[in-house]
Image (tube, rainbow, N blue to C red):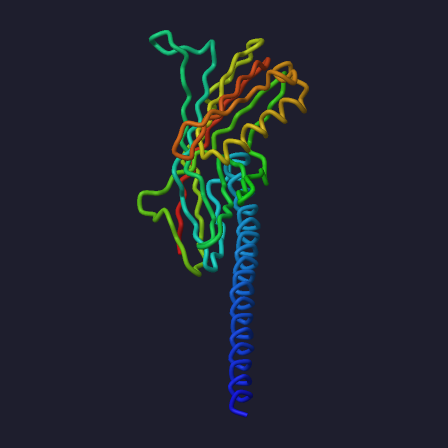
Length: 268
């Protein structure tokens, strides 16, 4: 009887331990899955907010609106004016006082929406919306670029923080993104036949791949001579530190370069 009692106790302990372990595994995996689902929903909400933001900013650089305001709900997320992305354009027949090709430079601060735990990001960069996840990055909204053999137009959307704004807000706040036009100009207006233009973009490696793919596809769609299947307009080089440089060359009949300065303020 004593042996039987000991055996039943041991069996109970083993079964109880197995049940507790199983519950622990289910809890951990279930909790992790729930957090992943919540992060995905936060990112989707951020993407919808950025779609509105992009339209509002387009009103500024396309329609001449003086300012726009966009609400972004965070819900355990973060909104950041990130490290600058640089754009440089050179045109072969525009020289400075020293006889060198004039470089038209721009630095814009991308606006980034991210969750506190996951790797996903929604980025507004020079008019484009880019979504990055574990598997890479994709273009969600096209930038203000017109690429064809007859005419190429590049628009700089130069986002910069106001002197009194914070560059990052996190938590559960609803953030008001104020964007104000501070200047707009046409930097280049070249109607000479066969203009030689070089566009250089320095950004994160994931986003660089998106810019390269977009410009190459646009050139291919336009049927330009720059893209013959082997000699595409853009090539990307890794420059270290998680950043890459995209260099694109064009030869349109006409070329225009515009720039719109936009001060950005994050108000929570």
